[in-house]
Length: 98
Image (tube, rainbow, N blue to C red; front, side):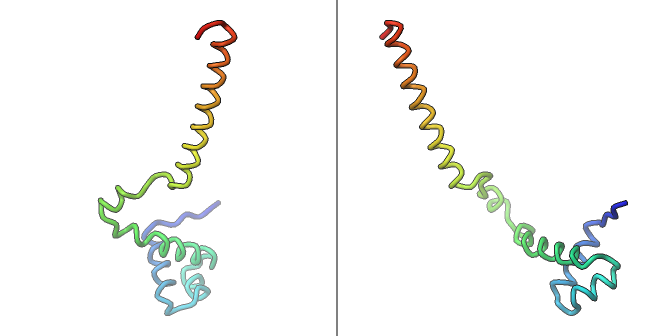
């Protein structure tokens, strides 16, 4: 059975790991958890800590999709539209409609 840990517990362990007073091995032994978990929680806290203090404006300005992905999608759609326009024109010419 997989054991689950609460967010308070995870944050407490991650903060201890960030402080650096104890090694990860010492922390994992103290809380009876695997050292990899301590490392994962520490990484996650360090990665997401900036989001805790983000203002509403900063959160709103964060884009849902990266700019590069959007530009790629726009290019793909332009190619598809050009292709369909050409096919439609060919269709109209074949059927005697102008």
